[in-house]
Structure formats: C-alpha cells, structure tokens
Image (cartoon, rainbow, N blue to C red):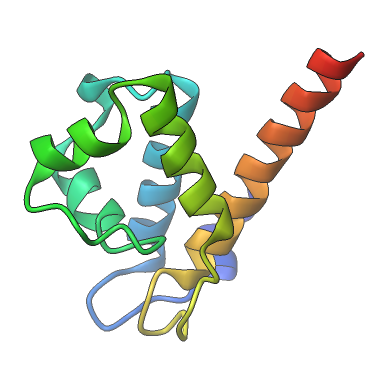
Amino acid sequence: MTNPREQYTPTEFSTSTSKEKFEKQFKKFVTGGYKFRDFPKWFYTRLSTCFGHIACYDQHQFYAVFFITPEDRRRFNNMTLSWPCHGDPASTYSDVEKVLQAWMQKLVDDYDSQVLT
C-alpha cells in the first residue's frame, strides 16, 4: 500500500492515518472470517457510517444483521460493493470506501476464477 498521506485525504475529524487504520481493520475483519473479536467498537462506529450501513442501533445489532450467517455476509458484501461512495474525501471516508470496494471486488473475482476453473 502507498503512504496513507498520499492515498487518503484527511477530514476535519479524521487523519489519513485513521483512514488507513480503518482500511487495515476492514481487511483483517473480512479475511479473518467476520469474527466478532475483529469487530471492536471503534471499527463498528466507523463502519456504520460507511457503505450506507446506517440502519442499526448498536454494535451487537449491526453484527447480528450482517455477519451471523453466510446469507448475512453475502448481503453485507453486496451492499458494500454496490455503494456509490458519495461525498468529498475531505468530509467523508469515500476515498477509503473506493479502495475497499476495489479490494473486495478482486477477492470476489479471484474466488470466482478458482471456483469456475
């Protein structure tokens, strides 16, 4: 990955390093199998404001809605991949969302190519 200061635009309330920390935790959470131990409160708080995931009241409800069953995780992945990443990176995490979408799409493509060959 490039230097976060080059890749991510800081916001009024988040540094580029904070954005990089979120990116790393997201990847750890997904590649680790969506385990609750990799879903700390700070990560839930940020994730609940990204990719249109704003409907849940707390960390445990959010986790129950999106990560318990394979169907839940598929719904989360589909929502994440289809989100249009609105906003100015100086005010939102849209720059991180775009990086994570590209990363997730590559995971899906790699999985599909392995399964279909």
